Image (cartoon, rainbow, N blue to C red; front, side, top):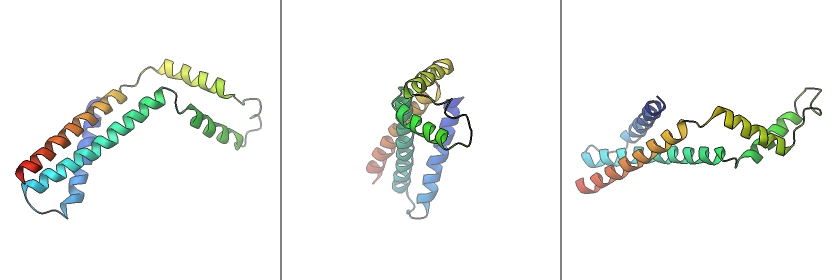
Length: 134
C-alpha cells in the first residue's frame, strides 16, 4: 500500500515538472526525454534525501534538536505545573527510544528509498535516450 501511494505521488511530481517545463520547450522526442529525465531526477533527489533523513532520525541523531523544541514549548506553556513535569535530556531520550521500540519499524523508509532509486535509474535511462536521439 505504501509503495503504491509513494509511486503515485512520484508520478504526480514528474507530471508537475513536465507541465512546468512544457511552456518553454520545443516539440520533439529529445526535449520530452530531457523533461522526463529532469522530472525523475527531481523526484529521486527528494525521495532519497527524505529517506536518508528518516534513517538518521530513527538512529536518534536528532534527539537534541527535538529536546530543544520540547523544552522551549514546555518553558513558554501557560500551565502552572511545568516545573514538576520537567524532563532531563537523558529521560527524554529514554522515552523516545521506548516509544520507537513500541511502534516498531516504519515501512515507509525502505519503500521511499526504493522508489527514489528507481526514479534515479529512470532519470539516467531518459538522459541516455536524450543523448541518443539528439
